[in-house]
Length: 264
Image 1 (cartoon, rainbow, N blue to C red):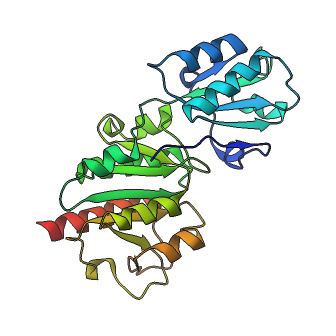
Image 2: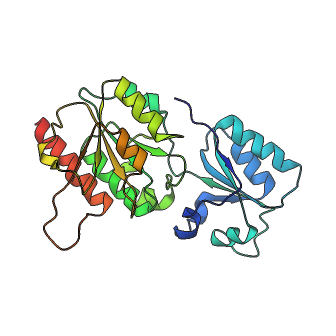
């Protein structure tokens, strides 16, 4: 399953909420970004292009993004100040380098254990949450973690640090469409299990000995409607206090280790 490049002229709302990334992960200026894209050893997560940029060399950058399946967005120039100093000469382009390499989805699925245990994240945008999920996933021996290309934090420096080293051991793949992924998982005989506070089924009642892909929703909104509808089953973690849900990274740990408990 190959990733498809995304083009949009609207800024991702996530740019407004995420913390300023480490400078080690940010490349700006036409030539530095172009060389980073040409370098096979460096994984570029995404590219921002300032609205109104007309330099001919940006064409080469966007062509490389398309050929390598790297997402790029057109955003207002003011957005750049969220990532670099205002006086930085960005020349209208910024690239974000991943702190770890992504893997292909087929690599995760083809090399999964029997029975498989995979985590799918539907829009986790907080880097500390993703890092904590990767740590729980690694400790639970998960086969891999799959995230969407859009409205999801990538493998940033903060994610790497929050994972306490787990980002080096857990394979993370990106896909353009989670619903297409769910279809492919089902075709491979993997049960797709989402989470919902409204589900009548407790997580302890699900048979986690089956090959399973656990789908967790993002902060605040949970699973998107169509993703939830496409799941084979929805389970809940019962709450006993006044708050009706757990942080997504905590929920991941609870569910994954219940799967491990059942599998012995």
